[in-house]
Length: 273
Ligand SMILES: Nc1ncnc2c1ncn2[C@@H]1O[C@H](COP(=O)(O)OP(=O)(O)O)[C@@H](O)[C@H]1O
Ligand SMILES: [Mg+2]
Image (cartoon, rainbow, N blue to C red):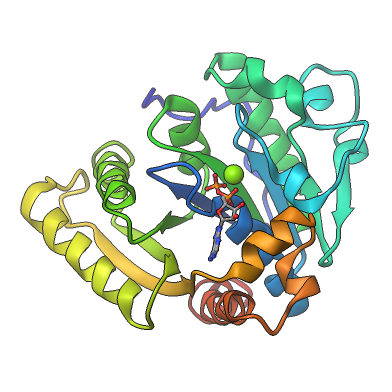
């Protein structure tokens, strides 16, 4: 589970995408919503963005985007199709690699899954500025493997106590097993402005008290931003339309825009010198 990635697959040399993992402790907190809309917001700011549906067992990016391609990551993994055939354009100006329903069999981390995943990621990295991994929830080995491939972890949590205890568990594993020293927090479905920052602060206090840092340095939670609970999000999902395209003026869409601005400033600018 904590082995190093297979060394036989070379990392791309030259310019390559920043890989962001969008993950969470608990399921259903808004990872896919954040991944797709953040991708649209970053694309609008001039970045070449690809979202990879890395929630292999419970993939639902296709549903959210209303895209049902014949060829998916599943066909690439099984050798039935070339990678390029599976990369498709999403509404919102970014590319996606959808998992496809057949990926359920890949929800266990076998050496084959590990290899295929790395190969796909390393082939796409030189072609994009940002690759967003829409991962599964929790601390299973497939989720942890996907997260281990990213240079930045965006942890989505909601203010619900269950989401926060699960977020704590995820931070603990990422600190101890992956020796992460920073995680960026997105607090989704907040009721009031400022709630998210307070929640990140509380979580940090618990971590400081109970988590033994794996890298010898304490893990820092960096508050990336909040997204308010907004009925426009559910309406968009029901109509299978991307929030940022359809209701760009809604409170949640505006919040995603601010997250994109911040990411652009603190994560992406630094790497594109
Ligand atoms: N900011 C929000 N306001 C209202 N509803 C939201 C918000 N974010 C997510 N949701 C609801 O939560 C559901 C689950 O989100 P999703 O992105 O599929 O979660 P995950 O990928 O973490 O399982 C969405 O279909 C949407 O209805
Ligand atoms: Mg999802």
